[in-house]
Length: 239
Image (cartoon, rainbow, N blue to C red; front, side):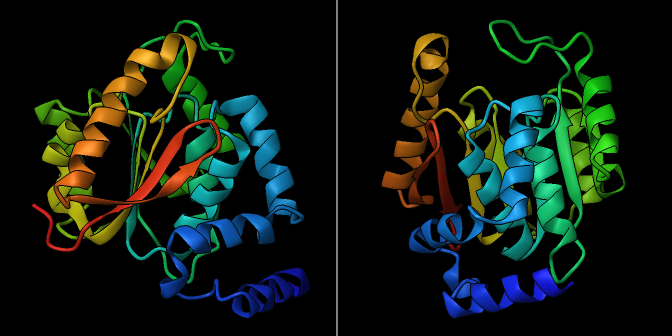
């Protein structure tokens, strides 16, 4: 408790303890403040076991889940690294949050993190890290009618403040399916804006769709972090 109180004081000192700090500069400040903290060491270990995201992105997922308003929706958790980071942040938030994660469960090739059963590994990892009670897993394709209906059963319109996507570059499809659930200025974290090797084709679609949405005023960009993860916001009153 004493360490947490000290951490809260430091966040206030650097202007990170309120919603107005949630911008690109605030994210960079948060990374600097969090790096010597135990949560970063913990998230680095989570990344090594359960995630292909850069540790900085896991830290920012924790930070955004802790401070951004609203609930959390995720597409593509794989075996749970990003979900764990967000759930830990939500647990430390001032208000309770609903967390929904959508996973299709198909095996992934050409990855250092192999899984024989993605859904069971995801459930097991959330349980091992003590956050299974915070997360509802919906198994299915993100664009399927049954999946969308299930998500809407648990999340109301204008309720989601953090939308995490690793959706094979299909950003516009995801916003078409779930856009009505997002609050004004909802934060988006999208993997593979930039990539090399086997992920280039996916990144080309992600980059093209994000760039188009930014140019038309649907999204605003806060920056690129880690190995090519894009972070930004849905613009107020965007349709």
